[in-house]
Length: 258
Image 1 (cartoon, helix red, strand yellow):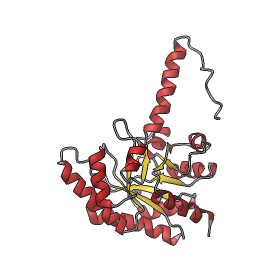
Image 2 (image 1 turned 90 degrees about the vertical axis):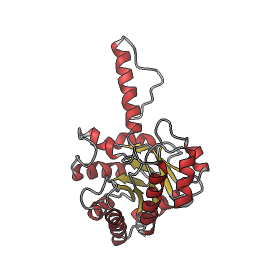
Image 3 (image 1 turned 90 degrees about the horizontal axis):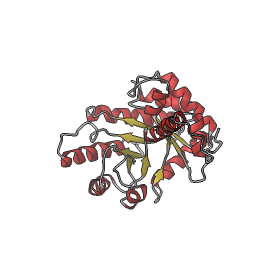
């Protein structure tokens, strides 16, 4: 078995383990190395929004796929843990984009449905899984549905039912987990887990959401943080700059991480 396939198997196991998989999103080599150096890190995930912002692009597949994959490949080469990539909606060809991602060592991905017709969304999942099989890699697809992000005015019951229907279809097509980003309280999370199954739901950690431990107790498989990690880093940088402009000094607690 190839090293890439072994890392993919590891990533799948991490999604199905009793403990919630906590992935801290990274956007370049130095951020990846800083997080990977921690003993608690078992896997990494890239943040597509953050990588796009690094190069001056708006989120949403505005960054050229070649540039995105180049950065992802650099991240993979710099760490020893499995890396899952944010592949947006597949850049027009989810199967081919997945094949190219595997080529740079990626062993899992988020691919979003953008609430396209269900048949089209399922076809994208099938294309991703088929690409992994063709490369001999048990690719860990964290299939994302945007029903909570794009349905703010819809009744909660309808959004939950839609997410469960889509998620079940994605799991049946071979996805490892179902990513439902949005503000998910305990009751909503419980209902999604009941609909999808234990250790099948993936969530995002944003201000106001539950803690990782609380989601774990509810049966959630994975928590990631999207662009929030880069925003925290940029906030710290901007706050430091404000302090330095006010005759501050570099704090003595700064660690030499680069």
